[in-house]
Image 1: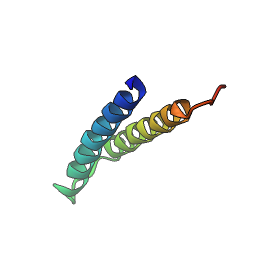
Image 2: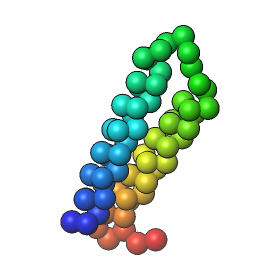
Image 3: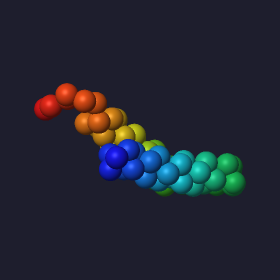
Length: 64
């Protein structure tokens, strides 16, 4: 149960970051800050990696 809760928390955080990234890109389409966009994509990549790692740990019988 705790691992599923962690997955839910990761998904919520990823959703918030994705929304912020979309707003950053599309609100002022002519004014872009590549560093902020790169950082947002990097944070999303880290969250997705953590979700995948958590998924691997949830599988029964899976031992490193």
